[in-house]
Structure formats: structure tokens, C-alpha cells
Amino acid sequence: MKNIILTSGKRKTAVARATTKKGKGIFTINNSPVEIYPVPLLREKIMEPILLAGEKANSLDISVKVRGGGPTGQADASRTAIAKGIVKYLNDDNLEDVFRQYDRTMLVNDIRRKMPKKPAGKGARAKRQKSYR
Image 1 (tube, rainbow, N blue to C red):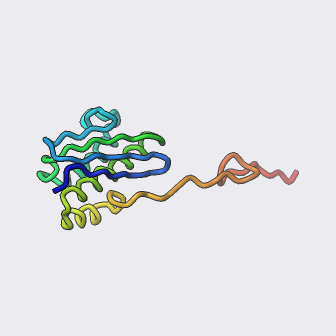
Image 2: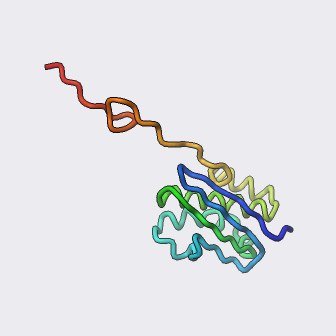
Image 3: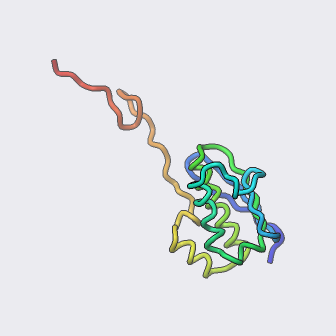
């Protein structure tokens, strides 16, 4: 086993960097415990890789620093960074398969981005109304 593993996750403009090391099962995001993450639904999403790993994750400490984007993008980026860190630290192919079958974006960054704005409208698809009279 290695001492410290560094992993990252991205979603839209949010970037999460995770540090995984041997410990007591303490998981923090921006220096606050995951258990007190403000949005309950996103907290559950972040905890998914930890719950899927089960007892194996209880011997790890993972600290995540996340910047950019909004709450959901940050949660998804953190989730990816945590899952990658657990798999890389434990070097467990079975766990990697479990993550991939549950949700592929746990181990692969979501590459979808916002479409660029087009002329004659406020956004990528919205257009000013056209009048014929």
C-alpha cells in the first residue's frame, strides 16, 4: 500500500482534488466533514462511493478540496475524486467493477459542458420571436 494518493474529479467548471491516506474513516470536503454537507441529496450522492466500498473505506481518510462551479457540480466532482482515490489506494479491481456497474461517472469525469451562446437570442437555443405582421 502507498502512503498518499492524489486524485481529481471534474464536472462542468468544478474541480475537486482528493488526498487519500491510511486513517480512521474521516471524510472531509473543504475542511468540513461530509456528514454536515449542507444539501442532503448531494450529501448522499457524495457518500455513494464510501457506502459501496463498505468496510474497506473505514481504514481511509479522504480530504477533498473543491473549487468552481455550483453545488451540484462540486458534489459530482467530489464524488468522482473520492471514488478514484478509494480504487487507486486499495488497488481493488472488484471494487472498480462495482463502481462502474453502479454509475460510470464515479470513475470517469462527466465531459458535458454548456453550449455556447448563439446570435439573435439570450442563450444557446432561445431566440427572439419573429413577427410577420
